[in-house]
Length: 335
View 1 (cartoon, rainbow, N blue to C red):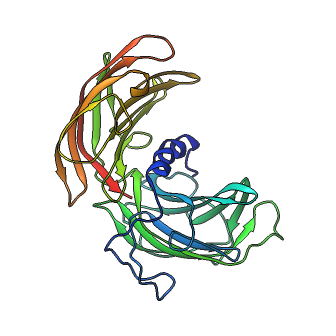
View 2: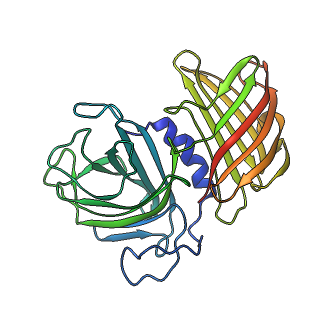
View 3: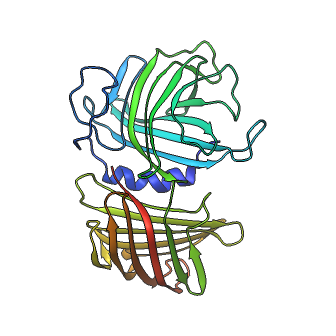
């Protein structure tokens, strides 16, 4: 029911690097707080927490937001049960140092898109919604009666929008209750488990890589809302061969040819991890390659293209060759 730490780190490392607090767009949802005439941009969120307000309009902090859809299993869960997880993270600097605040929403559903108001029940299980708050290393759970209202669930561009009104109590200290929390998130991108997800395939010295299949296999791209810089990521996992991950960076998502080297804006990386062992090639270590973007659908936010990459494994000294790379209908986000 919880998002894996490995996936969080893999996604958020890039998101923190590309995100800022000054992006705007012409998309204006109904103001969560009332009277707000500022525009909203995909991935934005804000909330009050124990009397303080955290929002890109009033505070400067590192932030990231993401959602994923995974199979749901447990007592009472139907055979086609799924779990929508939304993660809001801020890293706040203060005179006493910095700390991370994480709000995690868990909304179970079936094949139909999730819409409407969900009330936190008296019991925590796999068939009811729940919300968890983590401040530094301390965990809180939303008290019964709190609500999460999902106002938009876009299964074409894979975004989810909602407002929430909650009160949190410390997990191990029932007397430690925070002041009521209200907030919103707008067009948070669904990375893993997205609808109509594209596929990345490649030959890696004879191994057939594919991001198809769902679960721990996925592919997506994200970049700054101003269109400068785009990260392309693809992950494949199986219990025998471990996890294989691609990361490519191009200066802008546009059709064309992009040679890959140690340039920070035209960069390729491949990592293969099995247990504690790993192989890695990247531009920083001398890997070279090429990405060609052949088509872009700006309505459905999909792109296709080809790629190759070759370099020396930084651990074993073995040369690794990635050939016949194909990206088909891969989902992208501007955040």
